[in-house]
Image 1 (cartoon, rainbow, N blue to C red):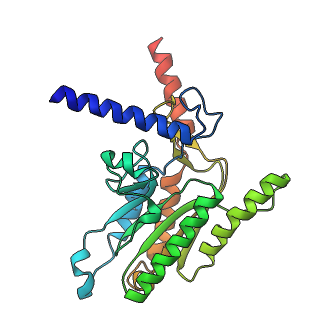
Image 2 (image 1 turned 180 degrees about the vertical axis):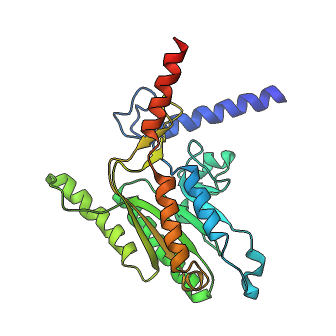
Length: 266
């Protein structure tokens, strides 16, 4: 029985590798010319979010049973998931590794969700539409719901070719709809090179972390009730400060540590 379980696990992992390799361009097992694996935020960022939002009291009767904070990692894979509960692209296969399904199929009930989607206009727009719909429902039902969205900051200042301009224009639709939303309670911008992510293809890479080459926005979207019982201005400022520290790039330090280890081994 143990041998059968082990073999089944190996088959599932192989299928997982091949499917995500195909999604990333089909050449991921050799290089990244066909695309790239989605990165994830540092685990310390999750720690910061959970630490701050866990301080929010639940005094009303309807939410008294929700004193424990329920967090969902909205866009992840078995390769880069940090939280026990995560949504992913292929629930038919990923559920073996803990996926709860596709983000766009999730119905949220008094939860906290971190959403770091693949940075493609179509998915980002679908995510923005879905979060708006479920926030409107939470508004109508008078329930608490919070999304912490991590996306590239839309910027048309840089010169781009025609194709890039089209992509940027499409990406801006979702970005602007979120930052201008009535549910937006905070918008934090991180400068390129000053922050980073966990490498999505760390099972193939020699390093775990990567530096971000673009500006990133953290957009907090909340239902009215979540905002009412949420963080005050002072705590929100502290949250921003802690997020910036937790998001700081670790790539250069990791490279230096690897060089030291290599030198000491010689």
